[in-house]
Image (cartoon, rainbow, N blue to C red):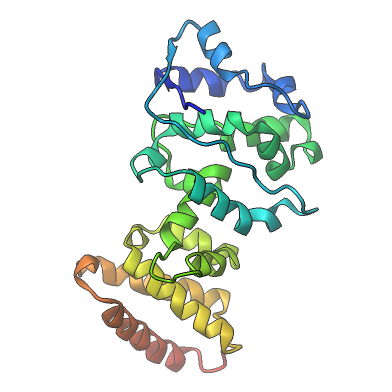
Length: 253
């Protein structure tokens, strides 16, 4: 499957045309139509060097979000792409339209009013030239790929996605990590997720407030130190400092 090369100027036209193409988006299973539509707008569509082996996503749960762990793994394994390409809005727009059947399922479009569905399609299926932090946090394919990318640990033989499962187990945790620049450093992300996993295993998961306070603490620390220079051990020491500070101010938690 070739992900085409397109003119970035057509991305805004695709977004603007979502209401016009509403019925196409709502078809149970339709053929891939976006390339022809782009050509119809007068833009060139040509083959690129991006070849992807087609993959199948899980759609076997009544609650689509319950498939996210499996599908994050499937998507990440299938897409051998750089973080630069994963920030490209055209790539995600084209790929999302290749998998409209899944996108419709995950977005629960059948449960939406027409206006709600149009808003969701525009926000989660179409993108501008560069995806935003909000896209990483809210849009279906970018969110799954970036969560897997940030948490995948090749050193955990046979358990490479263990931290992905931890990250996806808590919506607030995942959103906060996706929003903060310091977590683009995998040492920071893996160390923090390891800490969360240990707390969960010990039966003492972080409260919503403690979660946000810890990430705010680390974010502030990241403004005065180069995280790339820190080891996992150093970061754990900082988390220990946070725990001591937090316990004196929130003795009942």
